Amino acid sequence: MTNTRRINTWLFLSLLAAFPAFAQDESPSFGEILDVRVINVEAVVTDGGVRVQGLGPEDFRLLVDGQEFPIEYFTEVEGGYAVSPADFGEDATVPALRPGDAVGTRYLVFIDDVFSIKSYRDRVLRSLQSQLPALGPDDSMAVVAFDGRSIDMLSSWSHSATQLERVLEEAQARPAQGLQRLQDRRIDTLGYDYGYTRVAYDPRYYVGARRGSRTQAYVEGVLSAATSTLRGFAKPPGRKVMLLLSGGWPNVQEDWAFDSAVDYRVWLGDRTQLEPLMDTANRLGYTLYPIDVKGLESHFAGAEVGSAREASLVREIRTEREWMEEGLLTDLARETGGKALLDGARLSAIERVMDDTRSYYWIGFTPDWRENDARHRIKVEVRDKGWKVRTRKSFSDLSRQTEVTMMVESAQLFHLPLASTADFKVTFGKPEGGRKVVVPVLVEIPLDALTLLPGADGYTAQLELRIAVTDDRGQRADIPVIPFELQSETEPASGDTAAYATSLRLRRRPHQMLISIFDRTSGEMLSKEVDLSL
Image 1 (cartoon, rainbow, N blue to C red):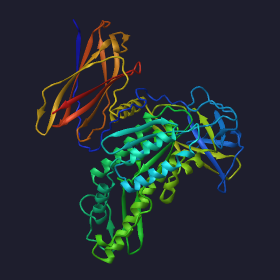
Image 2: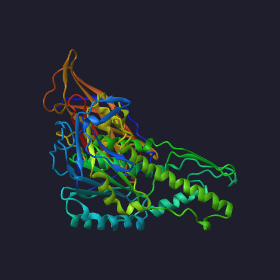
Image 3: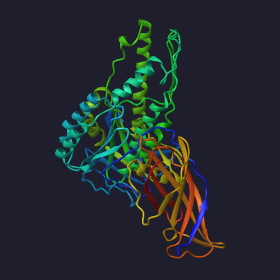
Image 4: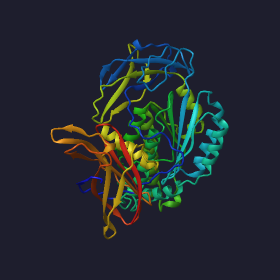
């Protein structure tokens, strides 16, 4: 007979945020915690805009949080070839290189179909198609597109220009939602309920308030999709870059004011929404090259306003808005060592990125990992020279708990179960409530799939429960982390299970769930996808 132990707790998840779920057919790499030991920094050195070559590790100073740090691994790449021996230990994420070895580049293309206007997006995609012949024999490209509800891998890594041209052609056939987002932002610009609070168009003063939660949800959804895409393509060796096609993301935390009497503009931007994407790119060694697909906007539309004074105000607001949107892309590039491709530069993206990534210095170091979620600043300098050095700016020392949560989130967004060696049973009880109901959940865990350590009081397993929930509209909640402990007075026998009881607070809609149990002792993960229709 199966011996079942019951542990009770209450877990409430309120699905109040509104941002999308993701789905795809072909699976990228998931199911492992990203055990990154070495941080790799690509350093571009210029003197008056001219690349400086021929430097060695002794010419550089590496600063972490202002303190000099030893450089452990170093090589120089010039024109796509290694010109000095690479000393990257077995823990590094770049390949061992000898002088003369070709260094291929992995181009991960992420297409934002949520904020992009189709004609603008397609023009950029056609420009990418025309530049595919410039890819080197050791280069490859993968293409992912996100439409706000699902993420699709249009192509995994491919060296074939013919295949990639066909993939980019298919990407142009996809619908885009930029016109809907543009209408939302026009309402914002004119000061109605969606975002800005209108102050009767006083010619001296106009105040902007935070945008509505729906716009914020869309932006956060796109950023989450891009972050999860990086995690799904974490393993390829060599130089890694992401071409991030953006339709123009509003800064959802913006707070700014304009006083026309004194021509006074203040903008206070909280860009913490970008940190997960920047942290993931820096941790995995990706350089971000955001592409503003819309290019230079026209800032005047007189038909939308009732007077020249209001038209002038709208022009100022739109100019500021475009500056802020481009500022977000510039920040992403600067923090990861890349460049933002704005206006005309967006139509020569591959050529510009190739030119920017063919010659650089690869510098590696091993931080003092403490797993405390702290962000650390990186600075690389050339000793005794005033030369400019462009590198990634930071890295985050993620805790194991944060790393596991990000892994679960990525798997949920791609609708992929995590790798697990054992199955477990999930049972739902009778829901109670009105529009929002409380649903009992019973998770039966096979004890032989866990690591139970002997102690004075018997055997103990240290576990963490995570339940990622998405409804049929793409609404999902933050993923909670519920630590709990299983105890057994005697050594469990084969077939024994333990039952963990919890409750979910959900809306009356169909839901998809990814339920995961992380064994903190062994580092193993059990997971199961289940559907629930309320």
